[in-house]
Amino acid sequence: MLSSFPIVISGPSGVGKSTICRCLLARYDDLGYSVSATTRVPRKNEIHGKDYFFLDRPTFNTWIGQGKMAEYAEVYGNLYGTPCSSIDEVLVHGCDVLLDVDVQGGANIRKIYPASVLVFVLPPSAGELETRLRGRKTDQDDVIEKRLRLAGEELRHLPFYDYAVVNNTIEESVELIRNIIVAERCRRERVLHRLACANSALRNWVGAAISKPVDTVK
Ligand code: ADP
Ligand code: 5GP
Image 1 (tube, rainbow, N blue to C red):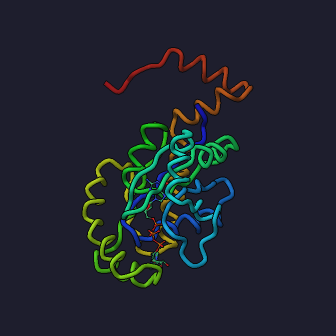
Image 2: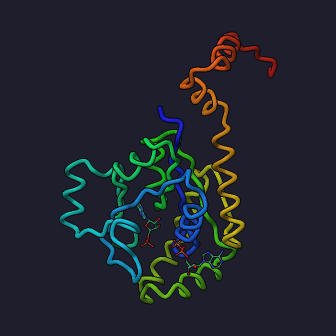
């Protein structure tokens, strides 16, 4: 077990997931990003290897066959997947890793990494979601309509997420998600795990004490 953990960011298309992830990564160097692979065509300004690994379908399927994908799913008519290396390279450096994946990906990541933390990002309203999706000016009308139609279905996965953040302003959402990450790092089991890896007097003292726990919460 590693003390660093995956943080899954899911939510309907256009809600602001990639904007929030970009801000978190720019601000905090103890976080890394899991670069996904996709068969979607690149948008203007998207960079291969930074935003996504842009693959054709045969290559995507080869990666699956070679066991390179931790998870993958068909989303809005394209394939998207998390290469195992994209997560593991960040975790082994002791950083927590942000994943911008859909609700199917969220469920699968939780199965593979039970220690992962799942955050669902909500829009302030359905109307504002549409405004943001159209305002981004990256997708054709039929693509936007498909994504809006599926938003209600995606919301049905909210009960399986640990946290929900309403993305009113970017600044507020970045602060809230940072707070979630900091609180998760303070979970007793993560702190004890870090302590167990350390060679300190505190480890021995705490270790001896908690080998005989007192349960007063009956
Ligand atoms: P997603 O990654 O969830 O599909 P994006 O991060 O691409 O969404 O955001 C969609 C659009 O909404 C972008 O143009 C972005 O600048 C804008 N946006 C994101 N968050 C907010 C916010 N809190 N307020 C206003 N606009 C936002
Ligand atoms: P977009 O085309 O807007 O970049 O992403 C479309 C959807 O695919 C978003 O919901 C995004 O979270 C999801 N997605 C991106 N990468 C992955 C991935 O690796 N796995 C899964 N399951 N979904 C992903």
